[in-house]
Length: 283
Ligand code: SPD
Image (cartoon, rainbow, N blue to C red; front, side):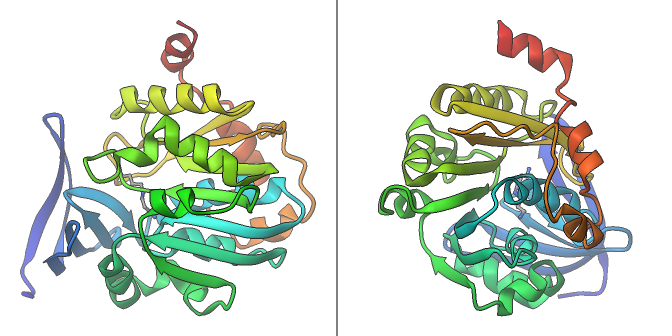
């Protein structure tokens, strides 16, 4: 690769969201194009099939929001499933909890893990060497289908935007299967796209979760390198969640090791649903 800086853009409905920097990786895996660029402000950043996934500077906005509301809500956790998450950021946040016994990370594209371990080591950090983490190179939909009932305490869906290759991860049938393999008090936590740049799919995720689970709640925050910046994460369960009124044992310890998440941040983020989304959900 050359030392010359170049622009890499995510194109989204006539807008583009770009980073300028040194290109470190540009290759095609069996599933997708993988790019890593090094930008002066955001640090190293990963793009898959033309969409920004993560950057060293802003990834904590994403991973801390996906992980901590769910893991703080349950006292005893045996088994955690991460679907996608090949950069390791979700696993890194999970291994902060000693109460977790086992983490299965199911990533379809082995190349994403290899590139992340080589070029974005800091994102997975300690998780890559944690004995509780097992990496499975497999299809998440198939994995869930083949898992026995009532097995996982928490399932994290850390996937790309809907595409031909990831569509099923947003489907009714997939969420139903996730519900089947979760324990009664289990929680499904998924990135739920942007209420601005992916409004239709965002609404559709929220409606589907509401239809399938007894309880679902959504939080909003920012991921600066994603189209429009505003992003969301949704949590669903058969038990009450009370995510906007968290009162968690041990949360202070976790807060100390976080860059973004804390209890007040969570309280506010679960009250941030834009009015246009409330109106559409009620219509
Ligand atoms: N628009 C990008 C959505 C990607 C969400 N997943 C990011 C993976 C970070 N672990």
